[in-house]
Image 1 (cartoon, helix red, strand yellow):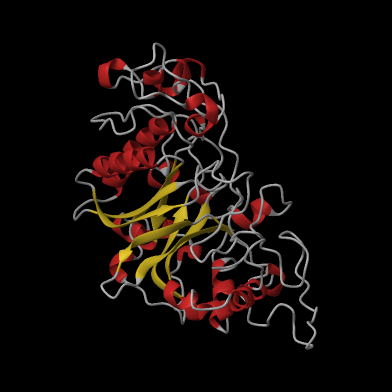
Image 2 (spheres, rainbow, N blue to C red; image 1 turned 90 degrees about the vertical axis):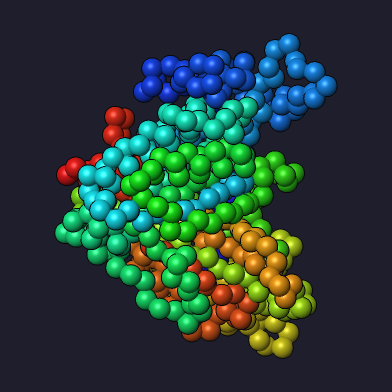
Length: 433
């Protein structure tokens, strides 16, 4: 779990606008209303009034619907230079799902599927109902910062006769010493990432995407994740993982001068259909929490190289203070141990390798022996995984103190094309080029 990680938890998103103009006004759903139109003034004005404005009594229905709180009104845009779900802040709920094309399905069927998925994503992200067969699960909610992101796995190109369009950067990842990979929960022809600040909105999107797959594709694997809810802390702060550590201090930021170069494929790159896209490495990393929690606080901090309470480096300062790798303690030992996770993952110790981490925590129950099946759904973004994820993970393989307490149980690498322009669907330049 490289330290150059998670975006800071954002103040919930921008005001929701009216139904997408691409669909010509309110979507016809249950009773002819869009999902947001069911919320009265929120659907009409899209005002963000703050959390205090969202309390609705249960004793009787209000005469006029209460406007959405800022959490429900947050909206990400479907169309754009890049796909949604990459640079947005962490979301409270997420679903990762991979599909394999059905037997006999090829390029034509894949194009029709991506067209359906894109239409559904655009509508749901605008707070509207699904194009058909809406389940009504999210009818009371606004967009809730929903994002839906689509990618292609290595095997997709052989299944569709597009081998010549497969990027070299999509070559399979090498083996790592911490891998204990379940092949059934790895890879896949197609990958979909769903995130939202409301669990029902996220599930609603997952169900709609699954239904849209129809006979063209079947689910290969699916994983559910979560993060801290917006507003749960007194002020925005870097997230914590299930080990209790502040996790994400050194994540690249869009304001960085080299951010686009490190995270997104340049417009001039080949293949041309990947212009403004990115590559997502997805890893299910189980945390061996029972072992971790036997360590003293000092031992945990030595493994990570940062204080558990503040996230500050053990060399001193606060969370954002640069780590002083030359500083020693009273015994003459490095203040930040040589095998500390945060030391090993520093970009300046890995040839400048950087990735944008945007993961979710997960908890899939308790094993029969009482061990929690919990950890991190690691998702990281980079312009080239051979210069981003791979060199960092190789370095971690050679002596990261954290390796004793984690296990990589599933893996995938996906090419995520740039955003769809108005009137386009995601992947259109690949499938119709």
